[in-house]
Length: 475
Length: 65
Image (tube, rainbow over all chains, first blue to last red):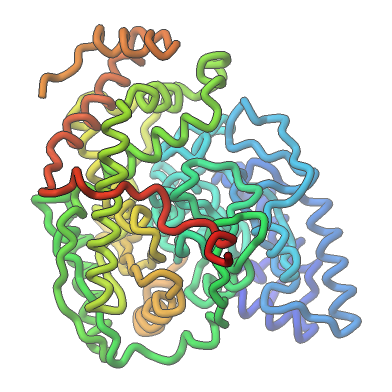
């Protein structure tokens, strides 16, 4: 295998070869940096590439290997994180001109944990400005989808999706408020896990919505996703809302199968009339359910009555909370926002308090509905999105009230589990027809609080019995 | 419910220190009307008596005490 081909290994394959001394961490970092140099001008996945520091970190990991010290499956593995995650001494921009010069004095806990696990930081990834769900709002230009450069890589962790799918990092971290990990994973044909709220520390991550934000992995395989979440999960005294729940060895239980697993198919999110799910997406998800059934899962239909309304409920809450973080910026430096961000923030400022309060009440009901459903089944499944990645438009969005409503309904596919605070994973479950571009389609699997292991196990069983993850994007 | 006009939204913006005009005002009005109308359509019996959920659970240190 040539050095250039190292980038096509999974995290666990690469980590195993590094641990065995067959591959040097420096060779792995160089392979990725060379590919970044060649393809980042096309994908625009990185805002900052840490070439020198990555090689220095790789040399340190190499020296540890020489001493017989292996920290774990991520030892020497090149990774990248969304530019919302603080990195000591490295600019952290939130993809905004307003933060273009912000250099944190310490790492976010998730980055510190990745480093403790031996990972090598390649750089900071592009995103929607301030993690708002807009594919073109980054002050550094939009990231592009490796499956079709004209299409959105998914928001708001745009670069995490593009870089991971384009083999510009081995695995990445995103931040998910209303679906910002699962959306990019779906659009880019990857595995993205939004963990339980409180499972992963948010310390040192610029907030979008304090009561809903989570940080999690976007990876190419379920096992890579399990290795990554295993490195960052757990209680952190710096984030008082993380819980002292034990963190299991997620990789160890992946292969236990799903015989007898109770799977609930959410009927509302497969209803074209109600939520606009497209035919190819619906067919792919129902075919995935058949695969789960063939593997021994017990499948039943379940109802989440507020599923179609979850999008507007979460948008109301996240909009209000997001603009409360830096209210002065919009008034003092409006010109330094992308126009789409400026409009969204202005809209958010005008949401009446009683509407926000109603949304918080409805959130409590959504959570009850989701948790009640999860008393009868182990996991819930449905599409991650209504359809494949859309073509990115630089034209101003929401040109009519009806268009704005459609976007709000779309947010419900992912927003429902954000509101409930439960873990939810997106996994590739097929492709559109060649005539429709051969684009990735995605299945979403949600589970009970702190049962990420069950969600990963279901996803792994599905992945290992389907061929989709073997296909590579044309870039 | 009656849809807000651009002028309505401009006045609301002024009340919170935002000067909205032109195409951006129209887009803000579209977004706000969409949120207000969809939220108004949600009617769940007894929802007014539900305690709002600020976060799924409290701080760990409070649980430790």
